[in-house]
Image (cartoon, rainbow, N blue to C red; front, side, top):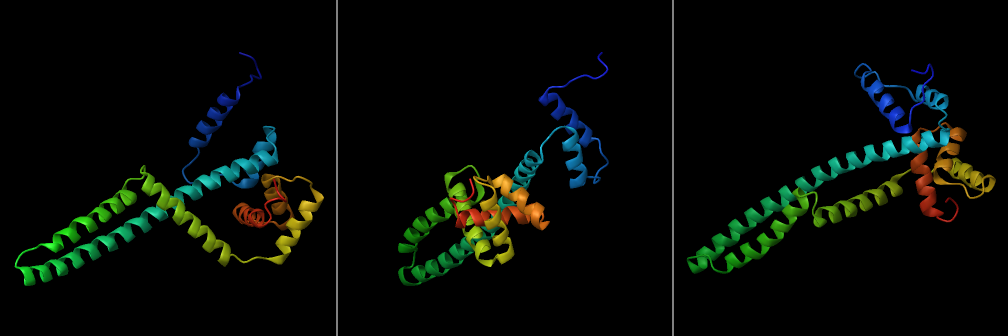
Length: 205
């Protein structure tokens, strides 16, 4: 066996994954140590930042879906109990006047159809209704975050200057440079750059 063997990208990834899996539970690894290890492996800082963003976005997506699932189920529970309470009242009125349920059955049926489809869009994650409701909820959440987010003029000024200094700057590069300039955490820098891109879509690739 050669003293200094080479591994394919897939083999190296598997070895690192297994090695990390053998670390003590809760041990983790600091970003600085991660950065040093990446540098030793010849991984550029830009590639590391891009990988961090992918992990962060996946983590955020999972958190968003958990939050949305709780929101949808709470909303459905409220709708379902309103349906039952209202139908009980309407049926009682119908019985009082007609002696038997007549028109209240029509209300029960057609309103029940709406409740059925709401249940699908609440509990069946693979349904188109669920996905549409999730995307709508996520857009609303993002608009709310944009409105409440504190816009620091100094950060906009930094991004304006970086755009002038680095022609055709990409999103990943902008996030990295903003962190280098301000010492921001990754998630903060990403939010600032994403907000800047939405407001100035032609300035960052």
